[in-house]
Image (cartoon, rainbow, N blue to C red; front, side):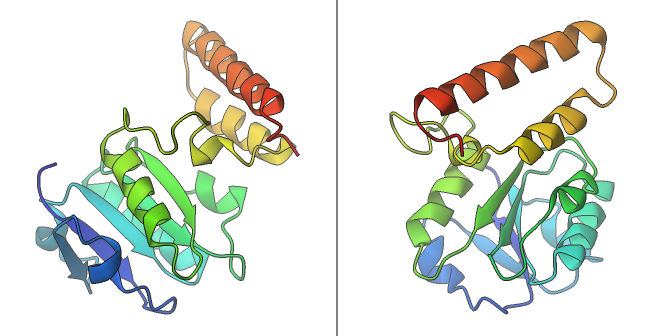
Length: 175
C-alpha cells in the first residue's frame, strides 16, 4: 500500500474512522476539488447519506484518477440502486459496503479486499459482493461488464458470471 486512505464523508453515519481503520493511515478530505489532498491516496472511502452526492464525489475523483479504488458506504435507509452504480465512471475497483453500527471488522475487511484483490474477505465462502446475488444485480453486472467489451472478452465475462451464480446457488446464497 502506498499512501493513505482518503475519506470523504458528510459524517451523517458518525463512523469513528480512527477506531475502524486503525491499521491504515488516512486523511479526512473536506473538499473534493482539492485533488492534491488525495492524489497520493491508495484508495478513497466515500460515505455520504445521499447516493447522488456519493456518485458526484466518486466521479470527481475518477475524472482525475480513473483507476482509483473506491469503497462506497451506504445503509438501508438510503441504499444505492443499480442506476447510481452505473453512473460511476472510471476503471478502478469499486466496492459497496452496507454499514451497520459497530461493524468495524466488515469495513476493515472490505478495505483489505479493495487494496489487495487476492485477499479473501471470508475464508471458505464467496466475497461479500457475491453473497446477495439477485436477478436485478445479474442484469446490472451483465450490462456494466459487457458494455464496450470485445466479443471474446464478453464470452469470458459471461462464463465468470455463470460460475459465480452457480457457486452462489450451491452455497444457498441465491435468493
